[in-house]
Amino acid sequence: MNILILGGGGYVGTPLTTKLLENKNYNVTVVDTFWFGNFLEKNKRLKIIKGDIRNSKSNWFSEIDCVIHLANIANDPAVDLNPNLSWDVNVISSIKIIKFAIQNKVKKFIYASSGSVYGVKKEKNVTENLDLVPISIYNKTKMVAERVFMSFKDKINVNCIRPATVCGLSPRMRFDVSVNLLTLQALKKKKITVFGGNQIRPNIHIKDLIRIYEFFIKKKIHSGFYNAGFENLKIIEIAKIIQNKTKAKIKIVRSNDPRSYRQDSSKLIKLGFKTKFGVKHAIDELIDLNKRNKIKVNMSNYTVKWMKKLKVK
Ligand SMILES: NC(=O)c1ccc[n+]([C@@H]2O[C@H](COP(=O)([O-])OP(=O)(O)OC[C@H]3O[C@@H](n4cnc5c(N)ncnc54)[C@H](O)[C@@H]3O)[C@@H](O)[C@H]2O)c1
Image (cartoon, rainbow, N blue to C red):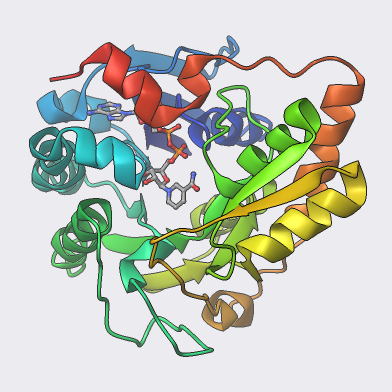
C-alpha cells in the first residue's frame, strides 16, 4: 500500500511515518515544508518531498492508496499570528488536495481535524452528534476544512479524526501542548504554573493517536467524524499527577481562557479501537528522559515562537 502523509515531518507525523514503515507492505511519501526541521530517518520505502500544500502537485498523489493529511498551522496562537496564511494553508489548500486525490483515484482520505471544533461545551458526553461552536480561528479553519473534505464523500472515503490534545515524545518535540509543557516545567523549574486550572480538556497519548491512524488505514470504515480523546482531565488534575511524580510546586494564576470541553470517543471504541497509553505514560517518559539527561529544548519546540521567528508568508 502507498501512503501519502501531508505534514509527515511534524510532531505527530514523524513518529507516525516511522511506525508505518515498520510494516513492510507500506511505502510512505511525506510532503512537508519542514518548518520545524526534518527528523525523519532514511528508509528505502520512504520518499520525502519538501513542498508546500498551498502549491500542491497532482503527481504527489499518483499511485497513492491512502492520504493522511496533517499539514496545518497547528494551534490557536500560531494561527492568530497570521490568519490569512492559516486560512490559506488549513482551508483553501484543502480543495486542491482533495481534488488531486480524487483525480488520482486515491481510495482513502484521513484528515487530522481537532477536538477543539466543539468549542466550550457543558455536556458530559461530547459526541460527534453535537453542534460545533468553534471559538478560535484555528477551530474555525478545522471545522470548515472538515466540511470541504466531507462534501466529497461520494467520490472518496473521507474520515475526519478529531484528536484531543496530544501528549508524549516525538523526534520533532512539542513542549507547547499541556501535558508536555507542565511536565517540563516541573522537571526544569520545580514549579508548575497553571492558568486557571478548572478547564477540562481531553487528552490522547501520541502512540494511541498513531495506532488510530493505522486502524483507519487497515479497516474499512464509513466516511465520518471520529473523536479521538480518552482522558478528560482538568488542567489542575494534570498538574497534580505531575506533582505526585516530581514533587514540584503548583502555582495557580488567574486565566480568562474559556476553552473547556470533554470528548466522548465511544464511536471509535465501538469500532474496536482500544486505548493503550495515557497521560501518565507521557509524564513518565519525560521523567525518564530527564533522568538520562536527554531532554533538549529549543525554540522550535514551541510552535508559535518558532513561526514568529520564521515569519512564514
Ligand atoms: N498536537 C496536537 O495536540 C493536535 C491535536 C489535535 C489536532 N492536531 C492536528 O494534527 C495535525 C498535526 O499536528 P502536530 O502536532 O504534528 O503539528 P506540527 O506543527 O508539528 O505538524 C504539522 C506539520 O505540517 C507542516 N506544514 C504546515 N503547513 C504546511 C504547508 N503549507 N505545506 C506543507 N507542510 C506544512 C509543518 O512543517 C509540520 O511539520 C495538525 O493538523 C494539527 O492541527 C494536533
